[in-house]
Image (cartoon, rainbow, N blue to C red):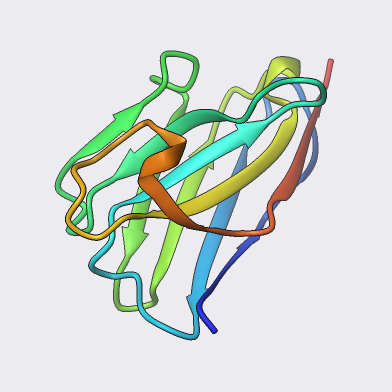
Length: 125
């Protein structure tokens, strides 16, 4: 069964950094665009960053621009999200997701059809 498994979350102080990983198992997602989303308590899940299957193009939410970097290693079937200068408002459960095949790079949740279980990121002030 195809799975996406996130790791790398944790608790950090404001200004700190974390690198999240999303590893595929059961099948390859090397031909899928991939995205990172997050959901804070009481809020809707929101787009953070996305990357094309080849890694040639990326997209970021305004809140992530300049602080976060998405990358991928298709040989390892893994996608990463490097997060720097973390703020308390970045506190959320972070999810990786695989885009629907042949869909363009997207910020829309509905354009992703495989989701991981999420990893908690907590940033204290």
